Length: 95
Length: 128
Image 1 (cartoon, chains in turn cyan, green):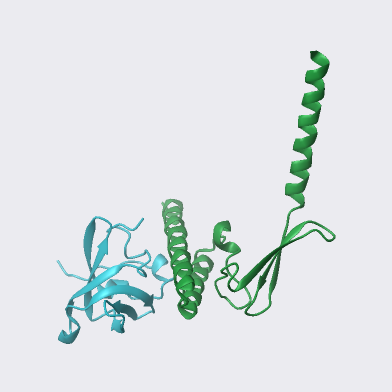
Image 2: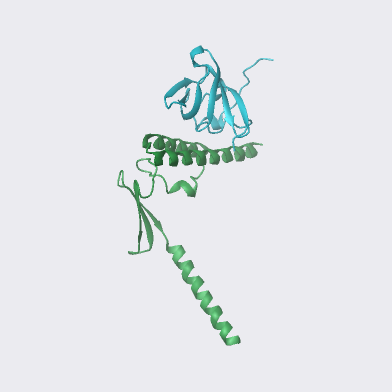
């Protein structure tokens, strides 16, 4: 099952998602369900049925899992769906 | 460590394939064939990338020729044939591809079981 620990490698399609941060301010607040995915984008179907294509690297996503929510920086999700499984995860933030 | 990690990743891969195929089935029932096709494609790609066998549960639900999701009775036909050898025939109604699933093993198993029961009954009657 999908957990906060393996969400980076797991299936995103079918999950409920909300965009909480984005370089393009017009994207903030978009809410819906992930219906497709490519290397650099997520396709989200909004509540009213329309589909929007969101670039991964400019947004921060809040995914609704069973029993909890996970905020994920889109830059960590870059990669084709099948390649994300084997991807090395690099640290984005300096400490 | 490497083996452990690989096992974990394979498990995630199986889970993902299951999720994708379930979603493909839902979309197919709703009539979104393009999306169902896309999900099937993604599931197959994951299996290839991780070098795992496609789960038996879903193996016969996809058409290998045109990549579509087979919804029995809707875009696929299932028939039982006895000619030459007992088998199930699944036909994709979109591209005409045919898949045969032999049932020789099942048939032999059934026969053997029947024979065993008969022998048991005979030995019982002899004893009493």
